[in-house]
Every structure is written in C-alpha cells, then in structure tokens.
Length: 79
Image (cartoon, helix red, strand yellow):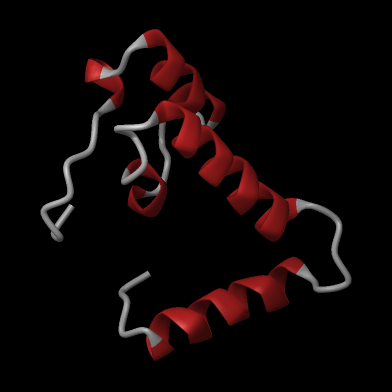
C-alpha cells in the first residue's frame, strides 16, 4: 500500500479477521484492507461494498463500475 497505511495480511490475521478475508476468497482490494486494524469495521465496509456493487439495483453492474471509475478519476485516485 503506497499511502503508508498499515494493514494486517491474511497470514498475520486473527481468527475474526481471517474470516472476513476468507469471505473475499483471501483477496480483498487494498481499499478494503485499510480497515484491517478493526475487523468489525472491515466486515461492515466489505458488506457495504458488496451491497453497492453486487446486490439488486436499478443500475446495471456495468453502470456501477463506470460510476466508480468516474469518481476515482475525479478524486485523482488510481482505483
């Protein structure tokens, strides 16, 4: 992570944190991993992300991804 934000890897995670990582198949995006110091917050952050990006919505998955890209560009973020 380039911003110098400490994250806990799955190899160093306690059981609570490992469960969240495993829910994401062990490969969560860094934007989610920034919450790894607080497993409860990470779980909520991950649930929020999944709801916005994957649950039923009047917006297609493609449109949601396009919105995410536009917001990232506007915020000068590489995501």
